[in-house]
Length: 287
Image (cartoon, rainbow, N blue to C red; front, top):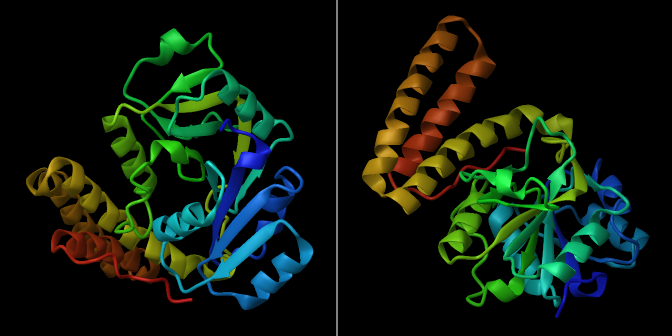
């Protein structure tokens, strides 16, 4: 079936996002289907959202990470298309309709995405020269950022979406790379704009602890990604200099009595070390 509002479900994963989620939902088309997975196990948020909106299903759980929670939402939805979005995004009035109109002309894609309204921070990556496509209404890219990914479930016959070994970071790059290796298309539609506030999906009350968690998982995920797609030795060659820099900066900030920066680089070192040792992505923010 073709992409339409009736054949589309929005999947939102939240974590301490009660301050921002209503703005996100308000920007979605009225009466669109929404499945929200709350990784902070907030029953009050569930009750509030399900009372206020009649088109939302909220699942509360302990923190399982982005990939796992998104997978749960994608597999629960009954539609052919699942739009994975972060709670700190807002759609423009015509964003969804523009994507639907594009899909009516070109439905051969595994992933479709709107484009960030801030050109300084493009939400896609590509190794190819897209000058040929400069006069078209889309870009064919290698990957898109995970804050806005419209997934065509018909292109995932194995029901394998995000690799759940990634707790946070690069699960979207991994999914895109796997689909590109299968010769699937990933498109960004240039006239479909989205606003991403970036790093605002959680309450600022937890910022420091979540920043520690980010640094741990960023390094864990980088090594795991390189190992998965390039082999252990290549991953080690890429990551070893990063580990040395983390040690040097840890010592520097130790001598400067900067506890915050010292712990940032300690977390980077530990995340990378755990990934090198083949340990699971086990660290969880203490909130």
